[in-house]
Length: 188
Image 1 (cartoon, helix red, strand yellow):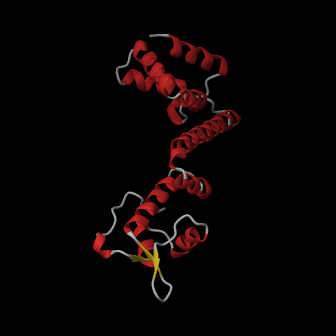
Image 2: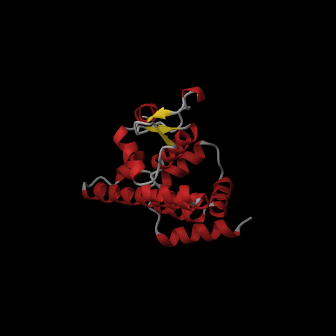
Image 3: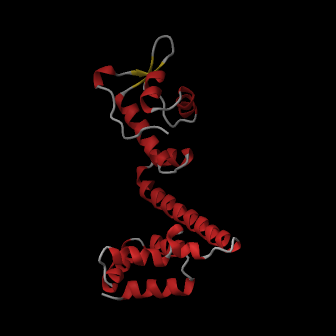
């Protein structure tokens, strides 16, 4: 995958050809041709012979595209974000929640597989993230029950949907999740 955090070449090396830009960011030339074709990244100029030339601004846009791709966003969504930057936060939050749901689904599949294998005790043995493993980790960090509730209150106040997804990923039953979230939202 492209290295979106790598710095750009010196400004005096611009404009870059498509091959030079592709090499710098670790993408194929055909990927950049595709990005041009769909209007995601178009060169700022062309040579008399028709070769694409990319400016520093083009390279910065490509780095932003690569970061968004590395975050799991699709090309159509990225194109929308670049056209309307105000949708970026919403798109990233949506992707974060989607990732949490996928993680939760995979962890539930792990639990079912372990049960079918007749080894449900592996869940508490630290092989699968569970409520117990989180509690043990917090205790090892020196957190008291009161500290843990404060952590839940902060999580609930700042990212309620992510808090829900996190609790689900631990395999906690919905009625207990409701109790945790209610307590997290009402205690001071």
